[in-house]
Image (tube, rainbow, N blue to C red; front, side):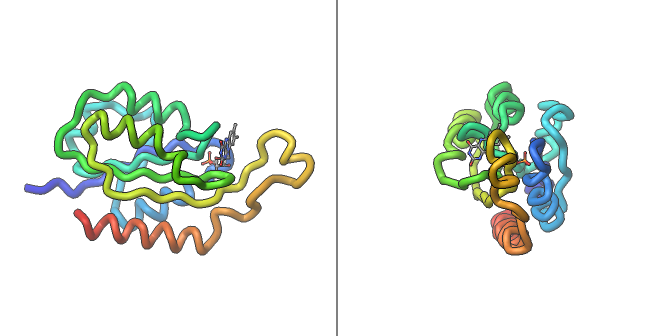
Length: 154
Ligand SMILES: Cc1cc2nc3c(=O)[nH]c(=O)nc-3n(C[C@H](O)[C@H](O)[C@H](O)COP(=O)(O)O)c2cc1C
């Protein structure tokens, strides 16, 4: 029987931007959400689809998520999707996690990213932060469309 259960591992620390997106995706996929610290590899056997999401830090997903994926054994027959929020979403910022996931045997069936509020460093003092109000309702609608598309592939 095909396993359609979904687990999402989400590392969202700066402003919980990615967690807001994660919850929209999880609702469509009826997915369980956990943080990297609560992950155990045995969990994977119960799920056919795993989502990996975080804010982007220095051009990549959060190190807690990258370390988690790096530490996995090679997998078989598990689909994955990748999502993120960032100050400036660019395609290349998913490269690091995508490469590790592919090496670990995951099949990546979709990717999503959008802008997230950021107050790191000088931006807090000069502009009161970048991307105020993001993710916004349009981002949530896009995330829901993304999740609906993922669901149709299962
Ligand atoms: C230390 C730090 C480094 C960051 N590096 C990047 C970056 O390289 N590229 C980018 O677009 N955004 C960067 N950001 C912005 C975050 O990716 C953005 O605020 C994201 O929405 C945070 O997600 P979170 O609230 O779920 O943790 C950085 C933020 C912090 C705090």
